[in-house]
Image 1 (cartoon, rainbow, N blue to C red):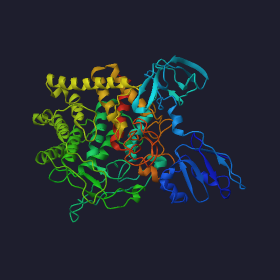
Image 2: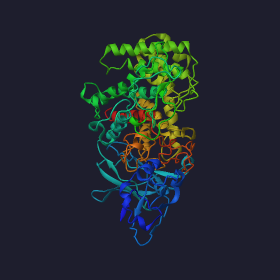
Image 3: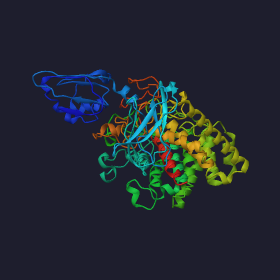
Image 4: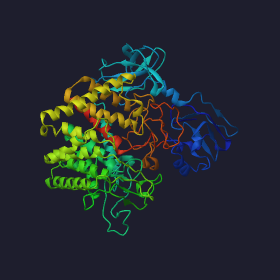
Length: 632
């Protein structure tokens, strides 16, 4: 018999009582991880803990099972009922993937810049074969090799931009290295974009996901959040705080992380209105007259509004006291609360609501006015309470999103309110809190002020103010171009960028690069932003396409509770994994300590394989920017 679950052969032994692995029909691709899910479902011996996953043998008996490298496995052969058969593992699977030629597994549209990364110590001849005709259609020689210490790798670049004919292809070198198959086609990157934005629909709170919209990832509604009280006031009158997006792999909702997430999606809708005007991805609201992007943003805005208290301050998060176990939303029934208010949450709220009040795609003037009134109330509360920093209450053990440096939040909220009102007093807050530009993150939102002022706010600035802000952004973009020369992968990544959510660090740099390109049309900015998209979809040292459901080697075991618990083999599609970094905060066993390779596709790895709404947002933006750039 043959049970094909991946591309690598693993070692194993089976008792004769088990026969020809007859029970393995119930373990397609997903295989063992997540460990406890399979323990519960298939009655595997619970005494074999997750550390067993990292052995180099598979031991299968009638009552117990433990695996190594279980995310990519092939078992071959039939076990006789009269004896045992041993299956031999020739190599560790991850090392084999390192030796592949790396390409963008999502594909390329014909006119796009195209490169592949070849593990090599020098220039290397390569050829590209059309897999339909079996004809070699392109030949070339790669660039000189570059060593990249962050990946513990030396590689060279193969440029095949001149190949523009649609088709299915594969790259091969003279010494036998191959790339995954890839396509050149006019619609490249469109489906990945739609999957990335639809991930927000899949992460909606307080709503059932019907089969008509969610397919096999349908689920019951969870967390109505219609009876919420502050943790510090259990006897207070309850209020409703429904809707919003689950933040990440967990089921809590956090205002601070909703700030960067919601704004980045608003930014995409504002920057690419023609792209989103008629674009749909099959959500319940697709039948109305609004863009689907507006509808998805509104789902979270509705929740955010409910988090503002009567005095203007905003509760930091809506949470349980502890993280839920690996269960579906409707099974996570622990009591939920709102925690204390904070300056960071209130300013994030003010900025997002001010931005929402200027959306041209919102047809309701009264709702826009409500957004603006709420933003002004929040701003005043933050002025009166400028140093209310949040830390978890003693009984709360969920994500903190603590931030005790809020000058960037003041700058951003001030810029947004200036654009929304024209009141110069708000602009002064931005000018007072000017700082060095860097990639946006949930704790560093200063760049959002730049993006707002250089777009809808530009006409409200003096020529000197506008030029100074533009020069700062362009100079930063040129620094990123210089950084990209340090490795064959041609991405602007340094050691300090390989932190929790390293993929989002790069994608947020792409957001700034696309803005710089729109202002200048300097080709280097466009190409570098494309290289970041390439990296996310497989042109990286691990060889993974980091987006679920996209490419030939996407993550299968993301740290995401619905994907873990739903008993559906593929994970929910469209989520970008956090990406490599060698902090190893989760205590899992990693195959490499090199920062750019230290990633495992395992539920265990919440430090590299979790998903979050703030990591998906710049992916959505960067893909929309690239697709929109084709029309400019």
